[in-house]
Length: 185
Image 1 (cartoon, helix red, strand yellow):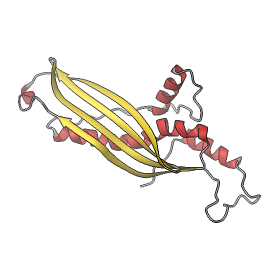
Image 2 (cartoon, helix red, strand yellow):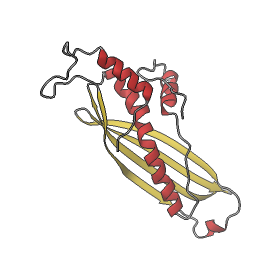
Image 3 (tube, rainbow, N blue to C red):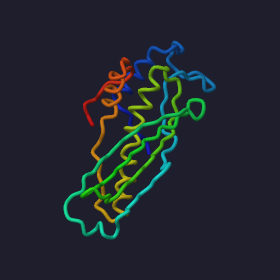
């Protein structure tokens, strides 16, 4: 299934490609020597999933809505030349009256191939665009796990990973490079 990348990131990659050293004709170089930036999703998978329902079956008799706390973390590591694993970790804890209704911990990973991408563009892709691509699939796994635990599915709202990346980079005193917030969550 093809995955569409963020249009702002794609625009920057295309602009870089236009400025790349390519033959006068603009044709691709022979024998895999193409210098055009390329990004692809190699695979996506559940790396770790845990669902806890410590107060079952009594939890199904509780009245009222539980408080739901959702925490995210993104990690990335290089696993081979031009191949990176990005892990989106989502921890959800639902509590009512200081008792745990349920807890879900999901590590959802994707392998991404990045070829001919400038070094300053890699981190923004790995911490903003890659999580945006993987999030809808991780959200479905999380919703299914909560539903299979006997609760209504937990549908997380979309997240503006580009905006979060920019906020964290600015808070760390870095100038965010290679990404523009699109305004869409």
